[in-house]
Image (tube, rainbow, N blue to C red; front, side, top):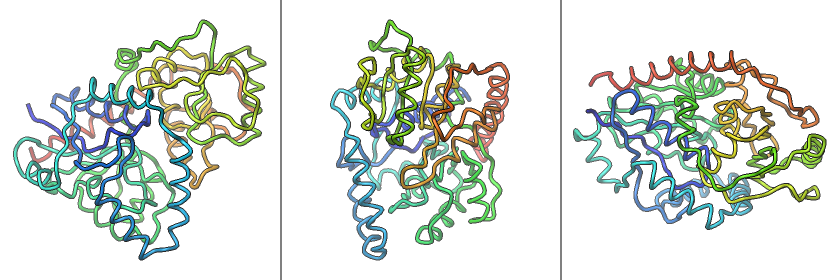
Length: 380
């Protein structure tokens, strides 16, 4: 059986990042191949991607582009404002150990295995692995170590609505030299067309390549509630008015809540809002059993849809960059545009008709898996 390498990192303590890695591995297995995560040795952080070469190249870019320093400082401040508890880190590490097969290689070893016969193809993706405003256009995420014929990009996200001039030349070269390129958002499709002239397909995020039943098997947690509850999952702290509107909604509907992302600092906390340290399995379990999910997270939104929950996808444009394209793209494809909101005063307990939604998911899943299989079997 042919083995496929998924090139991505699993040490980030982000639910979407880790679960989409798992999903892409499982999707490849469903297509009849073995799969394994591979990544580069030498990370100096347990919870973040701080490889020495990456740090050096970032510092070099800042020397040549000093105007970027402010953005880097803002990003560092954001990371510092979102500390990872030891309990949460342990749960993430346990999930990776139990559910994902992975190996780490040196730079030299990566080149050697890429030229050998162990792996038939190498896939980069998904999530924001092609973030256009990064200080380090990571060669790993563009599979530069692998022979051109073995490279596949499945559903990477550019994460922004433009590519700054300081990254355009390098990204154009790297993307142009991957034979099979797909993208996750319509905005990214347009950007790649403008950058390279290539018309690439928009495919599903890996999490949607698996069924609800696939995810239910992983959804296990000791964190439970006897009350009906909402999930509040925000990657960035909501604006003060939205916080107050969400709290009013909870009171009016007699809901307790689990807050599993950024806590609300601009409103008085209700006693029935709990902030547990959640691992990936807790995350899945809590969303599966929630009455409603209110989130600015792309994957928080996707898992609400996968588990058939009431949900609201809140604009996440109050940080450095507007990232709404990834939410809007999939909501339009599924006929759920009305679930995307900017002002939380519009939140209600509105039901979602999942019959048509599931039909759309199944159709798009079939198309995406067909593309992925075609990319894998080409030139084998």
